[in-house]
Amino acid sequence: MQNDHPWIAPLKRLPFSLKLIAAMQKKHYGEVLNPTRWWGRTPGLFWLIALFVGYLERRRARLAPELRALIMTQVSRQCRCAFCVDANSLRLAQRSGSIDKVLAVAHWRESALFSDAERAALAYAEGMTATPPAVDGEIKETLLRYYSAEAICELTALIAFQNLSARYNAALDIPAQGLCQTEVPPRA
Image 1 (cartoon, rainbow, N blue to C red):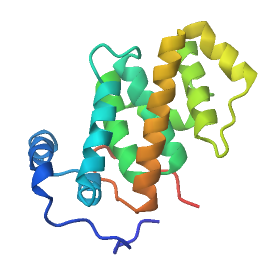
Image 2 (cartoon, helix red, strand yellow; image 1 turned 120 degrees about the vertical axis):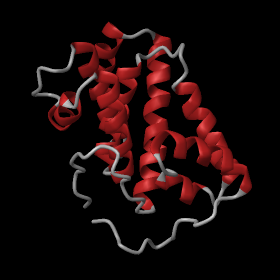
Image 3 (cartoon, rainbow, N blue to C red; image 1 turned 45 degrees about the vertical axis):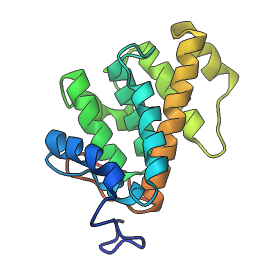
């Protein structure tokens, strides 16, 4: 359950070093994204994180844009991060061309919407996100059927990044933005 009064309040005024990214977010989303107001307390770290995700989302990434959004949505759901589920669900809907996969992510094992390659990546993301990670030999063997060693390393980095982001946002109770109306799993 989200708090009406976060235990660490978001910044009302961002530091000058984040004005450019705030302007880009306002142009694209109509407002500054919620996490920026918390990350604004550590702008140098924020820029390092932004560079990391920028690299993972580059045009020549080894993973297709829709797969990246799918994996980020799954990890966000597993970490129960309201903002991440919201933002990544929007990205998945845009990249897949419909809301169907967004709605099916919660039940990916039973859904016919996912390819075998997507299922392999989803199982890996789920295992890697578990605490402690639970990536067994079967998951690894299945993943190797569909992805190169380089793609698996990039997938691992993407999952690790999304865990960092989702756990940061969830721990600080950063709320959803209202970007994509979808269900967020309840927090324990």
